[in-house]
Image (tube, rainbow, N blue to C red):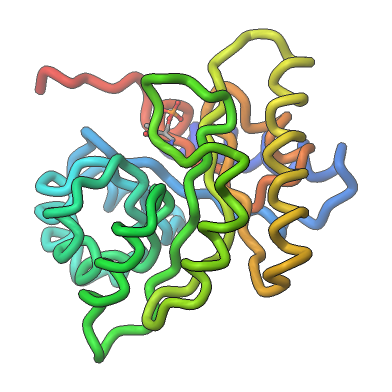
Length: 230
Ligand SMILES: *Cc1c(COP(=O)(O)O)cnc(C)c1O
């Protein structure tokens, strides 16, 4: 087996293990393969294993890759910080955007989503750990923003995305994910259609799934360490 195939098996079995621990059906968690900095050929190799959904952070790099793999009809998710003058190509080329953190971005995506495309799935990114360096709205602003976003046409609010503070402390990982899940439940009480909790990366996917993640965003554990100098 190639390295990518081995990693794919390993990540899939970690998701299954976490679902078993949490007594959740394995279909309740979707794997998003984060392919930033990876080549179109690496995406093809992963797609050949049955992976459909890919996540990207950098717009130009992702547009090149989307064109280069057009024949595969993959599902592309934008997960990086968004400048408001870059929303149009995102609205035109992606199925999902996880990193919507202010109303202006949601409004622009709504206005710029092409009429012929399905509604764009969006998640509100929450800065759950309140780190200065991180994108995302503050937890206390999330409900009001979600209500406004859920009323926009051509975008469909699916739920929340969060990147909690990196830590090796498993108990802290659980606690941070639990807080995001509780915020999700509070918002779901007002907007029952939301169904997505995007949280968990290579180093913390098991606690994320145990605490209720429905999409885990995995790069390094699938493709190996990133090389930004290529
Ligand atoms: C890069 C990235 C990931 C993947 O991180 P890994 O640690 O490589 O799994 C997930 N989510 C976001 C928003 C990212 O930018």
